[in-house]
Image 1: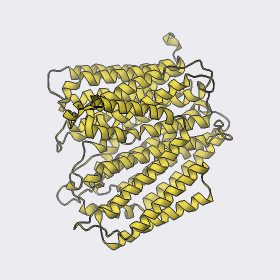
Image 2 (image 1 turned 120 degrees about the vertical axis):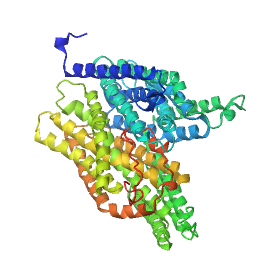
Image 3 (image 1 turned 30 degrees about the vertical axis):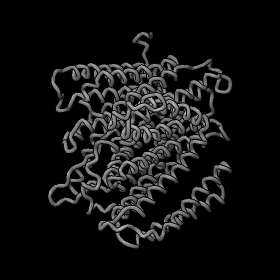
Image 4 (image 1 turned 135 degrees about the horizontal axis):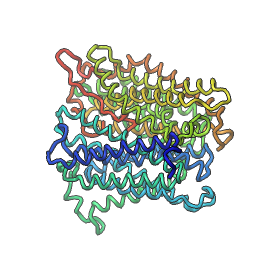
Length: 626
């Protein structure tokens, strides 16, 4: 233990974070143990979920801050390979909640799904503490335990992420005006845990030993599980199975409930095998994306009726199906050749051309507002890989760039990952109030305009970082530019993520709401994989390490490309807004579906903030804040 007089900045930061964390815990314990049924006007179950999610985020972000550093320094992967592993891991984390949410809705109920997910996550984080002998990934068989740890975390996240947020909504009646403030309180837990976990686990991992950092993340997850289990009575019976009798039925000699848990464990084995082949994850995402978006478009074109109930005659279906088949064939060709070439480019253009032609022809036949809204939502989904592919550089290549080329003044690299959640805590309420104020003044930008603005800011984050690095010459980059990078990426996130979720939730017809939200998060998963792929391009040669020059060159290209895409989105925002048909949007299109998919627990993707859902007043356009 160092004397206080010898403490560096990093030491003071971690002590302050620990004090803040324990202060919240003390207040939380006092809140939950009070005899009153409600605290601060909210049921005590909200605070149980607050602290359970806080500890889960503590563990996840503590581990995330260390992951790429651990891959490079301990397992001795090249920067390119480490970025690909990081991208594959984070993309799978954002895919599995689709299956976990479905199993919870259909059979387990959210409470049991969350508890099972927390158990898997606890095992996963503790398995991360097995370091091996430090001889590198080529020589140390302990690497298999590392892959197993990632698999447990991925599948555990699938059961926990979406479902714990759903329970928050279930604590309140559907029209309860306290919902927005409840999710604002909940988001504080998300980002408090993210910031504290990054600082504390990151500090322990970098300064004392990897096992200590990952072990701290595991302890955090275990505490979250204990809080959730002990707090069950305060959840007021919410989140239970919709078919409790079915869970007790015998299937193959065991209760159906335990069979579902067995499926989850089987999923761990599947992911354990898959995560070791990162390129395969990318190809699976490509094929799955074509199938998912093809299915969504097929439903919109040929199954959704217009305002009078009329459905398409299906005359363009052969054109549409031909386009999807060409795209699938192109994907198969790319998998066989392990890359793209002129033939693949031609196939992609032909396939997209046929699909677009079918959409245009159908659009000209007759007006169908529900179908047009799906077109708008697909536009939003296609923006997700662009934004998150750049945003998630923070945990990958930017983490390595900060470690090697930034003047950190002795602060451990991983601690810089806490800047984003801290900015979210500070700026989230300001942005929420800003949108409401602009809405009252009639100057609020439309959803596509906000999303375009978010992408522009994400691009500017890289441009500013490159400008600062170039002006530093051969010296280390001033840390100010890392803070500016995270500031611009966070404000971009706040412009894009909450409003995107709100729009997806509001524009979907009821029977497609879950499908569209799944597609939205699939786009996010694709963005995470893109992030890893882009990070891998910065090495000198195949599988090489990131240099300052190669990183800045790729960052500059990323930044300018993102700014161009964002400007384009803003220019076409009025056309996309027309497809949304806000003037005919009514609450009963999707109901005020606040108790589920819109709060999918994906902290970055919801920016930790439940978007406001102001009911239109007299004379207001329905859905005016979309």
